[in-house]
Amino acid sequence: MKTAVVTGASRGIGAAIAVAMAKNGYNVILGYKENKEKCENLAKVLIEGYGIAAFAVKADVSVSKEADALIDVAYKNFGRIDVLVNNAGIAGFKLFTEISDEEWNDMIGTNLTGVFNCSRAAAKYMVSAHSGSIINISSMWGQVGASCEVHYSAAKAGVIGLTQALAKELAPSNVRVNCICPGVIKTDMLQSIDDETIDSLIEETPIGRIGTPKDIADSVAFLCSDASSFITGQVLGVNGGFVI
Image 1 (tube, rainbow, N blue to C red):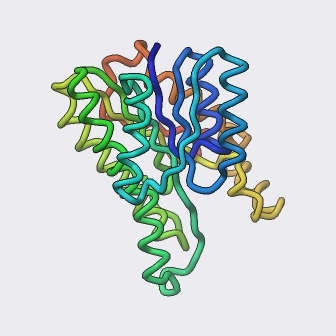
Image 2: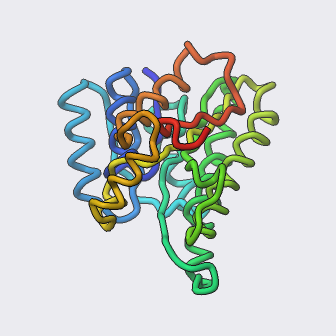
């Protein structure tokens, strides 16, 4: 049975990805930083609902030792790592001149360094096995930038560059690396946005709705499947046409 590691798996997009992987028969390691109870409850749901093995593992992916430990748990329990989904991330909305050093470092640390740390830890096992798929979750703002989200946009743009470079490096080892750039997705991050703004975002989305975590999870499931075996280094926009 194949094994997938999903970071930021306690809620929202990460939880939906974990469910999608379990549905497809993967054992799942669910990484979390703070929401232990939610992540452990999700692991139980996956075990009972899909007959796979699942573990919730605490890890701050911005810290290399914790990222290494997360990946090692997967390998020690299952002897393989077939898929890594780098989903863990934070968001922030602030004027550029008001972004503090701490806020910048936290954003880059979680959203970009975390991808680097987990990918480096998993790559050694994937290269050795001559098989594997790494899927990084970026953002449409990493493609085009967002006002008052300079630190977020910069980190997510970095994820795109990391994806493309790593894909070239790992392709000879039959390890694929791809990136998904979600648009406006209905998650907890939207709770602070008023209804008028949400309506405006829907109007700006050609397909006429905001996305769901399942929209992203379905795209992840495709990119780690045999149906995408000739796809690597690609940036897939899942945004309803918001950015074209």
